[in-house]
Length: 447
Ligand SMILES: *Cc1c(COP(=O)(O)O)cnc(C)c1O
Image (cartoon, rainbow, N blue to C red; front, side):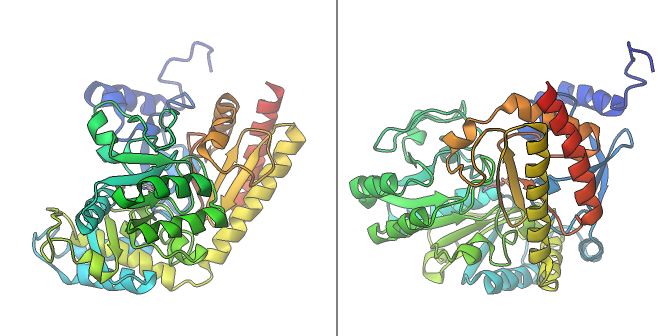
């Protein structure tokens, strides 16, 4: 190979060409920002197909996948049962704009698994949280909501305030904060109060001052969108105290639902939220979101109640088939969650060891099949807030990411994200990952 390698001889030539075409017709060349590799640099790989634990890009290079489409693919890609269910649904037409049996089946499955009474399907996690908040405002007659710094709940206006991976500005003691996106009016952001994750005293103080005005407190029960951050038992207790003021407690389980257990983080951590939001796994790789909870709250939703919420493609038969097949496969494999845990724990142990040998400081947070290796010197499991996570050395992370990618391991292309292990990751994948990680840490340590 010549040093002035033309794009023709580059192993990413096709991705580069596609990225150039994409940039000409789509802002930044991608349909969701993190895919552009801005925080790690280099060419985003354009994926041609995926199978099991692996992605294959447009240049024909295969990568071990730790993104899992950012959460949905817990069974791995191209799962035969899910593929078969979609294929079968496809024979009967793709959208009706009228109810069908699959929506009933998936709603029965979700309510049974999650201990909720009513569920409404939408098309994304963003729609789920946005709709749940409208419902909370409609049900309580109040207008303020509370969210936590560094938590991400999708891109609805009122939720782009101190959002995960957004700007680090400071909320004042009454929870007032600035929007983290252009185009979100201050007037709108004013209705979103922000408190610090894992700070029970701050939440108690905010609720004491303004609890009577607050419709809902929304939270990630385990944070994935600032990297993985675990809640403390004291914080979870403070969250449950907000109900005493008449505010609804909304668990955003878009990432953790059906991932941390069949009952999500709610089941694993023993939470009792008023409403739960889902997305990602609930659609098995097709666009589905949902929100649900007690009948007395959910029945405020139209046409039963006065809170309007609708969707042309909501309950789409292909999407319902994929979600149903995914949840059925999860339920039919009771050992799956223990296997995911074991793999992820072994991954954490191997990364810890490899980083130590290379003299690279990392701090690992992991739970179930979610894991983040923060590039900073802190005891494992000690990072608890966005401010903690933000102390990480993102340049070192980016070098390590590139080292993994060059060796065929596709890690999440941002320090402030979780990776996702699937049921198709087994011993061979663990070995491949740890070999690549060891070499990549050596490059970071030697730089
Ligand atoms: C991904 C995510 C969302 C947004 O879901 P989309 O389907 O991307 O709109 C909301 N909340 C959490 C916790 C998420 O991880």
